[in-house]
Image 1 (cartoon, rainbow, N blue to C red):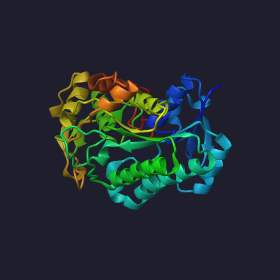
Image 2 (tube, rainbow, N blue to C red):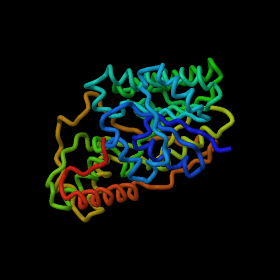
Image 3 (cartoon, one colour):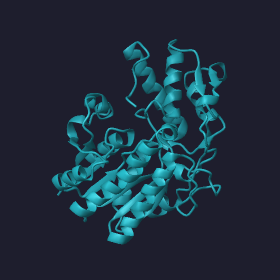
Image 4 (cartoon, rainbow, N blue to C red):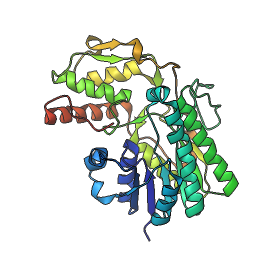
Length: 334
């Protein structure tokens, strides 16, 4: 018999790629959505990769436990992937309470709904490398102390710990994936990688001349979202729940990532990039580098797409979007 999966955050980058992966594996996929007048706009990612008609969209709200219990009762999922969050770090400084509610308390609501309505379901919580913040070790693993440096990271850390608490208190099959930065052509334009590749496309096509960036020296461990959603699924296939770091084990500066994007279209990045102080975070995270040894050993997971290949794919996708649109409004929705 085929399995049934429920995905929160189904309209985001990871939700779209995870839907695609699970459908290929024969799952029946349900995606949780808040009611919105802009539903057609929000489902653009699912449409872009050709799975919109195969995902069963169902309405619910992470801030409304009753609606989540109703959804879980209706879907009766074998697996639940909680990907929904307020995910933009910079916005979390402007909206810390909303971030805490959606990203932290929302995860608790989802856990409670599963505990009450589908206690046998396997649960995945999307944790984040931002929880390491001011990194206490050169490479961050499952045992590295956390040091969150933003309201987003603090909310993610609460969600991470509450998932572990439900696992231990109620014997739920609940696992956390501590995912380092993972990108794709489906990434929202407010994230730095997509901001860069979209700007490169506009500059190449003569629609813009410059790109404003913040801290060029910040280092990140960047991988491709397609690899990372495969790791999520692998975690829930294990007989015992646990927490895993997913990362490439390679760290690159924002400067070098930007250079790779401009190099892809034969442009010199220094001719176009300007540093803007307003784009620096109030509390910077300067260095993140993940150690995926446990995921490699236990899950057999390995990243397959390198940074340069990924950035090239993103630039090509943005070039195509801009050419088709003919103006600066074309983009995957944020």
